[in-house]
Length: 289
Image (cartoon, rainbow, N blue to C red; front, side):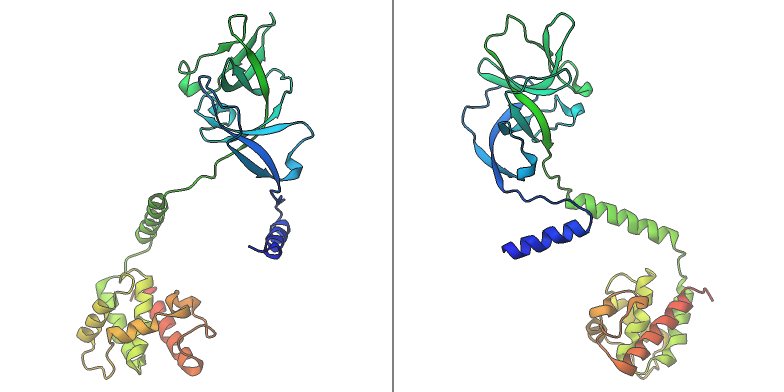
C-alpha cells in the first residue's frame, strides 16, 4: 500500500469521527508473562511492536503478552498485550508486572495497613486456582518491573459457522412471519400473468417475485418452468431454464423493487416491460385472491 493510499484511509476515518493513529514507533515486546503462577519471561525482547508515537510516554516502556486468565475481571485475557511503564512505583489497585526470582507474573497490587505488599489475581470464576502472592521476606529477589498502563486486545475473529447460523436463523424467522402463499394462488397468478408475457425470457419477471416470496428456492428455474408448462401449456412463449438463468444478472439478481434501468440486462422499453410484469406479479402475490 502506497503512502498516498494510507493518507487517504486516515482522512476517511477522521471524517467518520474516528481518531486514527499511525503506528510508527517500535516498542520492545516480550513473549510472555503469566496472569497466573509466575514464570520466566526471558531477558531479551522476542520482537518489536509498532505503536503510534502519541501512545508512548517519556518513561521507558515495553510490551508484554499475557498468558492465562487470572486477571480476566480486570479486562486482561489470555493472549492480550499489555503496555508497561518500566520502573514506576505502583499504587494500590495498579496492575503490575513483578519478577520473583527468575520468574514473572502480572497481578493487581495492594499494600495493607501493616505495610505488607500483596499481588492479587482478579478472576472470581477461578478463585482458588490462582493464589494470592505475599511479597514478604520469604520471597527472594522480588523486583517490580513496572506498572501496566494499557491493554491491547487480540483481534477477535468470529467463526464462519456462527455467522451462517445467525443468518439461517434470521431467514427462518422471516419465513415463519411472512404468510405462506397457497399453491392455488401461485397457479392462479401464473395464469393471470401469462397474457402479459410476450417473449420466453419475460417469464423471469414472474419467477423472481415467486422466489422473493419463498415459493421457490434460489435459482430453482427447472421447477418453475415445469409448473408454467403445466398451467399454460398452450402459451406461445414458454420459459426455458437456460434463458431464465441468463436474465439473473446485474440488478435483476435483486428483489423486483430494486431493479434499476441503469444496471439491467435489458434497456429502454424492454426494461419497462420486465419491470411492469415483475411488479404486477408481486402485487398479485401480496393480495391473496
